[in-house]
Image (tube, rainbow, N blue to C red):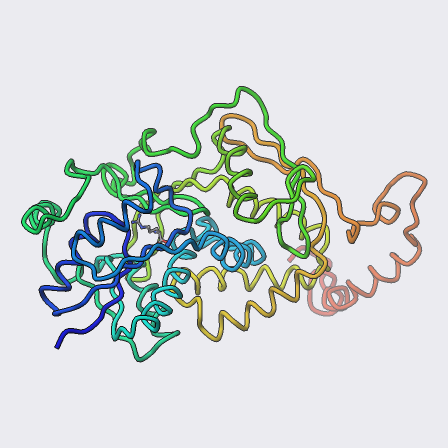
Length: 407
Ligand code: ARG
């Protein structure tokens, strides 16, 4: 008896072949779901409608395109900004943030269409399979997850031949240089020469961060309770704001990363990224926190942030620990309101040039050394004596003070 499978469809070679393969090997009726998370379909010279038709041509019984750009920006990128999320201190979780968005839509489609399984086109070496499968199981433990590309044992050439045999209309036939994953938060680029960690990142891999500006570019980013809401005083929906900051920062070459990272599956891999909008917003947000977060809160939050990023990287977006950390982060953001002025200068340098907030904990009269000074200087003497009392007693009885010499 045939069963219904919802496939995460990208329009590329692998997922197009997967449609037919699932029909052949699982006797499946395939429902192809393409989720728009801001990957530029136009960049590939394609419209979403063309992608939808290809899924049908490949044999899908139904094909849907879902515009999830606002959802991705508001419900996934914004929490990442609030959590200052950078995996291993660097990578702003581009692909890791889009997978749970896609999973949510796969599961919803599976319910709508009465499917028993969902499928994805990931191979067995990456993190994305982990995110699709663990994500699906956290939302719908009853659904089966199929990963055709992990088991079919076909090379790229085999897939091209398979597509030809079944008349699947594929646009790419030449060998691809890189494996690219893109969404509105940025772009991840792997494979080819990038696999040699000693080799320079190839210039032609970058598209969002080519230097076109001939001088510094500025942007004033407004935040309300941790959420970026405006650029130069103009309110923008988050997905447009990310794009606008990305264009400005990217035009100066800002936003590139080159790193060796630890995948969840135990492999170290060399990857390059370009995420001008994401990195600029993360930098601006963290700076505004320096101005507005009380010291202990800021320090504790900084301890939890790497864990948040790690959980998301590891496919635990919907997990209970991640939810509990979200609650902490959310409560920390109440007063993260204000403006950050960023300056980007070719080639690729971005700095916070100024910050201000009606809720700033920075108090000029406390900080200043000029005559506006309101700090109670005489309080310092007793404070410092008590702060050092323990070590001073220790020094007299057990340490340097005892014999008079150096330790
Ligand atoms: N290493 C990154 C991550 O695990 C990016 C993976 C992107 N996939 C790709 N096909 N380039 O999140």
